[in-house]
Image (tube, rainbow, N blue to C red; front, side, top):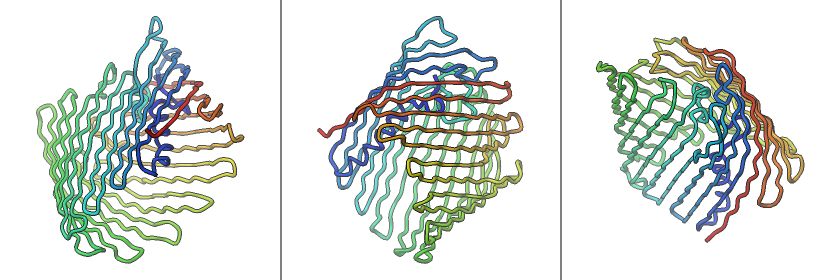
Length: 446
């Protein structure tokens, strides 16, 4: 069952739990966090089907665990959560008991003056429509994501250093009906020689590699290699320059047909320290085997004042197959005496390799939170999302309202209602939902 509006699942609960715990771990040592939550969830037409698929009822017990270990040179953070789900769905003959919504995250950071090491591993298993993807919001089935990555940089105090990284990600689908949801595997690696010419100038020369496979009808395979050289230069105390030029060659094989493409890659960025915040400018040229060459130019502004936190970005992007489009984003958060209000706008452009077409995505949201007293708070979320392509236009409006009450120092009662309205190629669909949750978390140092 999907968690919509303010009805967040165990993954978000565990993340929030560890975020608050991180402050307590600043003194070093080991901090353990345990959490338990029991939720009653009722959702009608959970998969936004046309016609409506009926009502689902679930009782979900979420267990979470977190560990933070911190010393002077390294930090280890581990979190795990999962749920025991007793669910009665519209398409089942009775109540089913299952374990799901599993999520595991491991982060390790080690830093000494001459070197830094980062290792990350993530695992998540949940319903397909629980992931933040508008095109999957009306899909059934389960999705499993697994990712591991590592990065090492050495020679930071020498004139010559090395940087290398590797990452591997897999996505698996089970019991889905959409032929476009296919299992995929992607591996990335990079290696660079760093030249610390002066305290204000650092150069780099290196290689990148990317390999992707999809278990589609045509057995899609991509191999991409990039050679690059870059420069980071502090022009003045307030102006920083970052530039990189490269050349990419790629091969795509599908249905036994091999296509090759090559072209330049360029990135030129400026960051300027303003009296309040920073201003940025970025020009990029990328080459993709499916889309070809794309040029993008953006300017941005970030500032934080006692009254507002603002982040803005505006630009244009162009590719020969799709033409020119406007892109950008705006995020504004304004603190209130007893809460806060936030507004965000975003417009982006992507290329769909499967359908060989451009997809323009837009999103607008408003978030409002208010503390009633020392123990209670209410919140309201409204969002509008649009995915527009030549083959399908998807519009979705999501409303959510929540109430939270701290019963004791350890126990919290959360409740909320939500409503989703969607228009796509299948027609019009609606999905109301509500939840009530009782949760407790506690932490200690061994």
